[in-house]
Image (cartoon, rainbow, N blue to C red; front, side, top):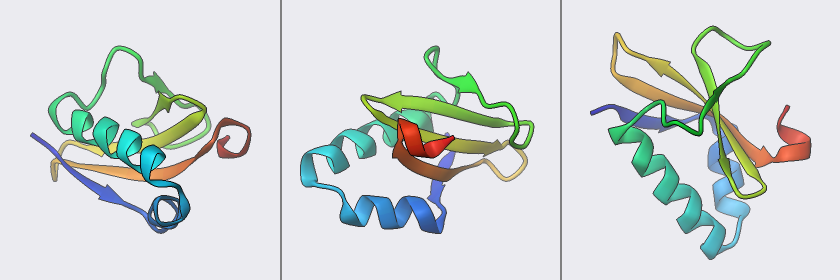
Length: 84
């Protein structure tokens, strides 16, 4: 099981979003602890080697996996048109 850590931008996004969206994102991030690379995740080109993205409706979450320290670092959470 891996730990999930948030960067500054994802923390700010989660503080400003509404409760329903917050719960949907939190549920998806909890699922990442069990399965860090689910079948619907995709590797993101142009970022570091182990950067992936997951869809949460219109929201995209970009995250990196560090298997050495067993940490998933969520780099960015935002709407699709602003995340890439």
